[in-house]
Image (cartoon, rainbow, N blue to C red; front, side, top):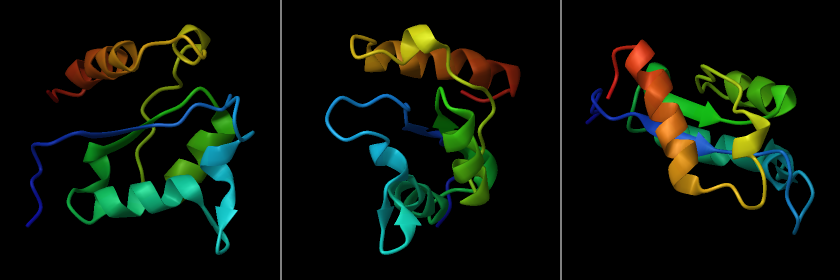
Length: 101
């Protein structure tokens, strides 16, 4: 059953210290981020599956996979020291603009 009241947020920043561009590395010909998007789309509609990224390339891949990318995350929220909480709070501010909680 799809619950249309839940907003699914998938964070995917371009920079990674461990594996460069790990979110878009291919696994069986599919970018890793697409697996997360497809899982979320199984339980929610496209409008409620958001990707928060600092990369236009990642945003394009996410959109092709069926996710919504309503904004490009600021670089200050995409550093190694950026807090996940701050990333979520940033997305929540944008959600209010779309009448979502």
